[in-house]
Length: 251
Image 1 (cartoon, rainbow, N blue to C red):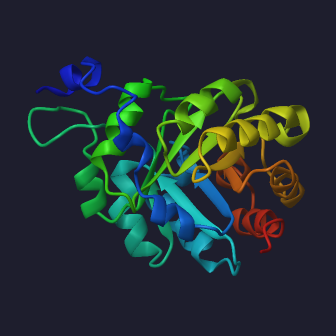
Image 2 (image 1 turned 45 degrees about the horizontal axis):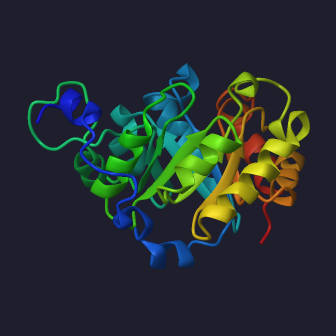
Image 3 (image 1 turned 45 degrees about the vertical axis):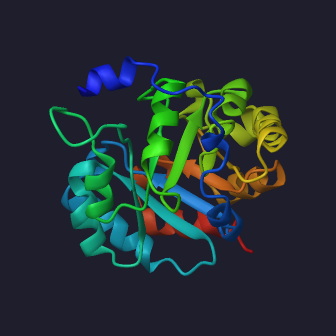
C-alpha cells in the first residue's frame, strides 16, 4: 500500500482495544520530569549547530529528563555528538518499507538511535488516524508525544494512549509570553481532561516557555514538564538558558 493510501484509508477503528493497551508497564516507570527542546529548523539548531546544542544539553546536571527533538537529517550525528542524551524525531509517518517517497519511516529512525517522536505539532498537523496508526506501529518503549492545540484535542489524543500529550496554543508558539501566564486554564484543563481518559498518559505544555519559573508554574498546573524551542535554540547563551529552565524541575 502506498504511503498516501495508508494515510487516508480508515484501516483501523479507534474503538480497537489495542489502542488502550499500548505499553502500560513502560508508562509506569517513566516518572521523572521532562524538558523537551524542539530544534525545529532553526539555523542555530541544524547540522553542526544541532550537534553543538545537543552537546550543551548533555552537559546539564539535573534530575530532569532532557530530550532533543531534532531533524531526521541530524539524528545520527546528534547522538554521536551527545552520547547519553535522549534524542527524538520531530515527526514520523506510519509507513512500511516500500514506495513511500519523502515519508519518514519509524523503523529507520529507531535504527539510527531515536527513542521517541513528536507528532501532530501545530506546524505539522496530521489526522487522529495518522497518530493511531503510528502508535500501533512503533514498539511500546518508543516515546510518542502527541501535540494538541486545546483541551478537546488533548482529550481526543489521550484516548489513543500516546506516552505524552503536549498542549500548545498555536497563537503563543514562538512568542515571548508563556502559556502558563497567558492561558493557565488550558494547561490545567488539559491535565484534568487527559487524566479523565487515561491515567498512563502524561501532559506537557509549551508555547512561550522560556524560564525556570515558567516550568515551575507548568508543574503546579498539572503538567509533567515542558516542550519548548526558541527559548533555547534562539538564546544568546543556550547553556545558561537550559540551566535556568531545569532549575524549575527538581524532583
